[in-house]
Structure formats: structure tokens, C-alpha cells
Image (cartoon, rainbow, N blue to C red; front, side, top):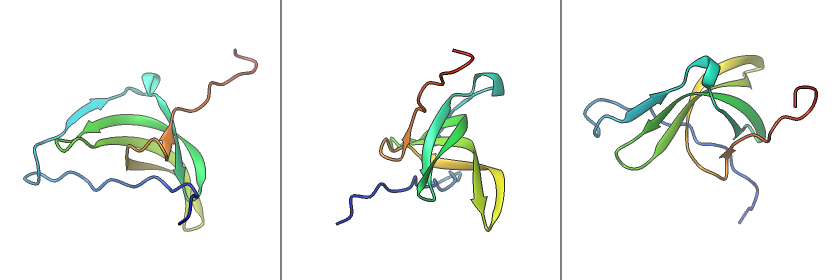
Length: 98
């Protein structure tokens, strides 16, 4: 059994009629929290745009994340199921502004 860290799991979009409608909390660009998310075997910084609380107890984070997909680097909008093993708050920034 491997103990290597896993990647974050993308969430399937909610569809009307499958379960009760989730609750959403949206974050304006100026107040968006950040997350470090493990994708493609590496940790990436992501800006949280929304939190989705599903009726079954799952928490989904909708983020903007910079990834390389098919050899093209870009910013993508993705939704990931919360898992503290594959997602966490980024460390505080130190340097000239601190």
C-alpha cells in the first residue's frame, strides 16, 4: 500500500433533482481566501471563488488554479471536494511586505 500523497478529487457538478440544492458562499475577488491544492502530483496555489455545502455533508471549493493541461499553461476554474490531506491553507507570506 502506497503512502504517497494523493491528488485532490474534482467534484461532479450538482444537478437539479439529484439531492437538495446546496448552499453557496461566494467570495469577491478582493476577499478571496487561498488554498494550496495537490494536483498533478504538485502543490498549487488556488484562489477560492465559492464554497458549496452539499446536503450529504460534502464541502466543495470552487477555485481558480493555474495548471498545465495538455502542454498548455493556463488559469482554470475547478471544483474540488474538501480533503485536508490534499488541500490546506497556504503558509503565510513573509518578506518585503510583512
